[in-house]
Length: 354
Image 1: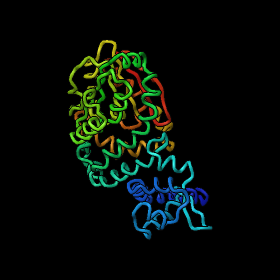
Image 2: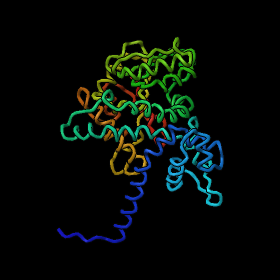
Image 3: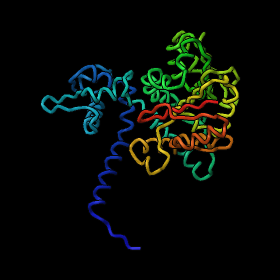
Image 4: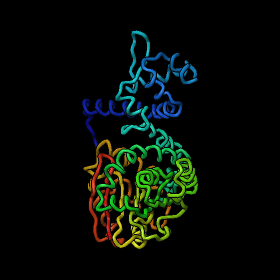
C-alpha cells in the first residue's frame, strides 16, 4: 500500500516526538533535582549562579552548571544571561520545590525511574501474560507512590473528599472505626487519624516493607495508639464492623476487585460507607485521550495491570477503568448504592453503601 506523507503532519509529529524525547531524557535530572534538594535551594535562594547553588547544596559546580542548563532549556528554571544566573518563578517553585503545597509534582521522578528500571520484568510479562506484583518491583516505586499521592491526599482528603460522603464526617467526629485497605506507607491513614482523634484507624497492605514504613511513620507522629498497621490482603482484612472503608488508588490494582469489595461488604457496619478513590477517567477510551489519560494509561501499563495479573483472577481493571466499570464491580460485590461523591481533575471519589 502506497502512503503519501503530509509534510505538515510529519513536521508536527517530529516536533511532538522531540518534545517527548526531551522530557524523557530529563526525567533523571528531575529526580536528581528533587533528591539533592536543588530545586528547593534555588527556590529559596533567589537568583543564583551555578557556583552559588553548588556552595549552597554541597555539590560539584561543573555538574550543576550542566544540570541548570538542561533545566533552563526545559523551562523548569529561568536563566538570566545578563549575570549568568538562574532562578525559579513562583509557578516553577510551586510545582518543583514546595513539597507541602497543593501543586507539587517533583515526586513523580521516583515513579518514572521505577518504570524504567523494571522494564525487563514488564517486557517478559508482555510475552508470557504473567503478572509482576508490587513485591517484585524496584524499591523506589513504593516511596515514589507515597510521595506522589501525598499531595492530593494532604489537600483534598479531609477538606473535600470525606465531607462529600453521606454522614461520614459526623461519625468520624464522634468516633468511628476505619479501615484503609492498600494503605502503602500509611499517608492517607495518618492524615485521617490526625484530623479525627476520637476515631480508630486500621491500615492494611499485603506488602511487608510498606507496613513497616507505615508503622515507623505512626510512631514518629505519636499515633501508634490510635492507628494499627497490619499485613493483610483486601480479602483477609479482619472484621471490625467498620463505619468507613477506604481504597485509595488501589482497587484497580487488585486481581479480584469484586471479591475484595465483597469481603469488605461483609466486614462493614450495616450503615457503613466504602470510599473508592480512583484515577479520574471517563467510561470511553476516546474520551481519555488527553494529557491526564496519557499519564494514567502509561502507569497502568507498567504498574497497575502487571500488579493485577500477578494475583488471583487477574481482572486487570486498569487505571482508567471509569465509573461505569467500577459501579458494576461494586454491584457484583453486593453494594446496593453507588454514586460519584466528588471529583478532581486527577481523581474520582466514589461512594458505595450496603
